[in-house]
Amino acid sequence: MSENDRLGSYVETGKEFTRDMRYIATRITQDGRDGFPVEPGRYRLVAARACPWANRAVIVRRLLGLEDAFSLGLCGPVHDARSWTFDLDPGGVDPVLGIPRLQNAYFARFPEYDRGITVPAMVDVPTGQVVTNDFPQMTIDFSSEWREYHRPGAPDLYPEPHRDEIDEVMELVFRDVNNGVYRCGFAGSQESYNKAYARLFDRLDWLESRLSDQRFLVGETITEADVRLFTTLIRFDAVYHGHFKCNGKKLAEYPALWAYTRDLYQTSGFGDTIDFGQIKDHYYIVHTDINPTRIVPRGPALHSLLTAHHRDELGGRPFGDGTAPPPVRPDEAPPAVI
Image (cartoon, rainbow, N blue to C red; front, side):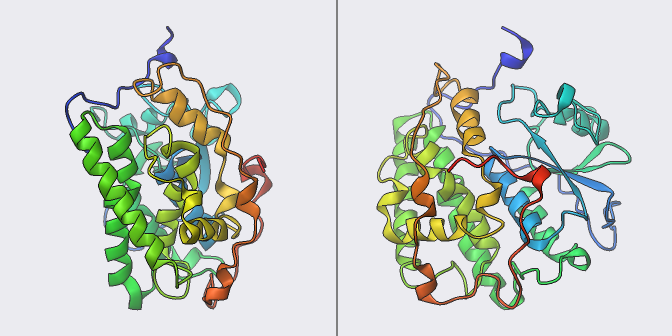
């Protein structure tokens, strides 16, 4: 077995899954108080299309039009126990950072770094050092600290009047849905799985009710809360329902949630960041303690994502007083799958 085939273990027998939330708290800010000022062209966002946490950052970058402010590097969907790798690039090396593994950027700043090598990560190109992998704060900073470099017509994804409600909804969604599917999939005991399963489907029922008479999660426009929920919902039937044993219902069996997901998928900046092939390859190949055969399922069929959703009948304006982002850049577009 080669080094790249030695995958990590995700399930600890007898225990519930607890996510390590000790991320690098350094921020890129306008005043540069952490030593990394906002500076266009200086940083590179390293992401992976497979990862829902990284997908958030890619979507927010698209919606705000920050493509010229910082570049995008994409790791492949299948990594080993050590690191995400740049196996999609010629020679397996990121063309801007000149490294084969994301861990090289982490070790450049923290030689003894002993936590997870995670995406998304913002990397300082001149030094080759990771700046932050704090994914919840990262996208908020894209909205606030990088505002000077937003495209004309960029939406306000974190509007001041709704921030308390957005924060409250995002916390519930993270606890029970975003992280909840992992607490099901990586559960090490029947008890911990049952508990996570109940919380997940209770929250999905709550979301179904909330979205039955309003188009978006908070207010009349797309906000950060919608971005964070979408990246889990779009993976639900393809991965979480079967692979993570979240099989109480398929997403397609929730009328409001399924229409909401189709609405966002068909909105510029959302569906054009999704690569279902990479998503399925990641989960079914990397998690060998859950899927030891590493066989990737062919389904589900995806054509229904493009069917009419009728969510516009609920009102709301997706981008508020702003506009939709322009078409995705050809060099950043995922392959069309449906």
